[in-house]
Image (cartoon, rainbow, N blue to C red; front, side):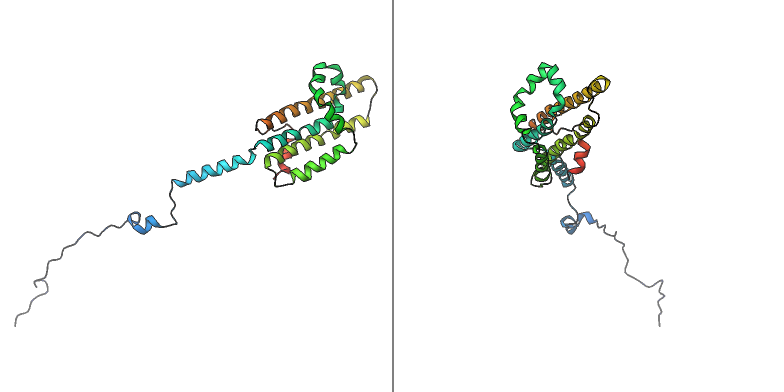
Length: 211
């Protein structure tokens, strides 16, 4: 009887084939998976977000006109502070002379200023149907009008008739009037050209009120 040793027994030769390499990127299901958006689309979405963010302060024709008109409110309400400047400087008198009829109507009733304030604040600023452009400019005009309380209190408290006190009062009133005039020209002209005016002192307060 013949015994074959396992080491010397004939066997079929074994061949090792290299293990195939699979890549998820080459798999069809990976390319079609909805969880992997195309990277090229990301900058486009970011651009759209930037455009929408810039569009919050854009304005069309009616918005520009409404915003420009709002800046006449604090100027009309504080026209009395220009009594010294208007009488001394003829060019300023000529500049605002076309506005005298509207100023006369505004000053014809003592509560007109307060009624306009309530209308602008509750009908425009707090109304989401208006664009942020209109509401921001309207709020700037309102805050600018509120600042008129300080020179008014100063004049009512001291009311000097002569001397250094009168000179100080004239300086304060003239400065306030020129500030209102500059804000009117800058604010209205910027709105008519579709730009967003940011008035000193009042812009930050208007931003906090307009969401």
